[in-house]
Image 1 (cartoon, rainbow, N blue to C red):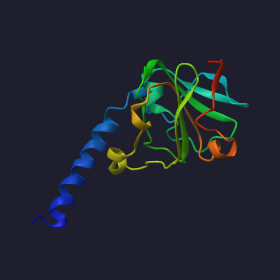
Image 2: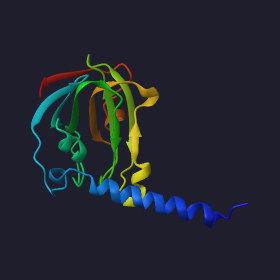
Image 3: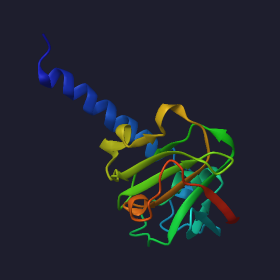
Image 4: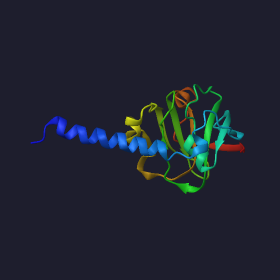
Length: 164
């Protein structure tokens, strides 16, 4: 029977290697301390949000990394060319998020509330959030944790694109 150390040491080494490889493969322009995102306006139910728009691979990889806060009337929307299963990477986040997946018709397909940040390379292997049941989404909205409860966002909520 293997001891606890014999099991945990290889797992810890693998997690560190995965973390280092993950950090090294981040696109160069997403590593910058400050990245400029185009801005737009969306509405979820009756709540209007000013959003940063992540459309390019580098913008999607960078996301909200290193930002210290996000007011309740702001968010980041990830826009994909077609509906797909979209995992969200929480590496280098500074605060917890509510993450909301929408299909191409603006129907809410999944919500993850109060998702904690992953701040270390060791956490990299476990800091991905997947939308439930492999449901496909065209848009993913990240907002400050508590947003969904505060504004009563539910499975019946709708996304309206005003300008992106």
